[in-house]
Image (tube, rainbow, N blue to C red; front, side, top):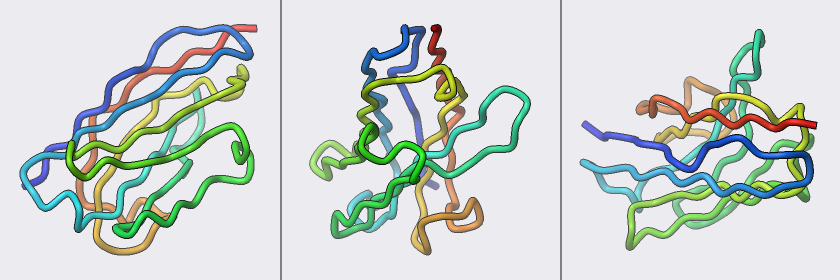
Length: 121
């Protein structure tokens, strides 16, 4: 059983930066693909970014150049650095751990409870 817990959400203004953290415990963190998803208000959850076991990164086109995913295997932690935040980035952000692919919810086995990010104009 892998426990996943996100932190770092909050209320910010347009153009601000925020870094989300996610700790995954109870498994072999270095063997997991880690992903970030988000659920905007009134919408379906969508994939945002993923990082492979070897550090390959993938980022959604809509946030490419503004969001960066990274991991620290020594700390069992994955990060989502979010710069130049826009109101459309407002969502609940979820962290997930898996061993399969990168882009779909079904690729991930363990999920956190989510952390709210609110961006005001």
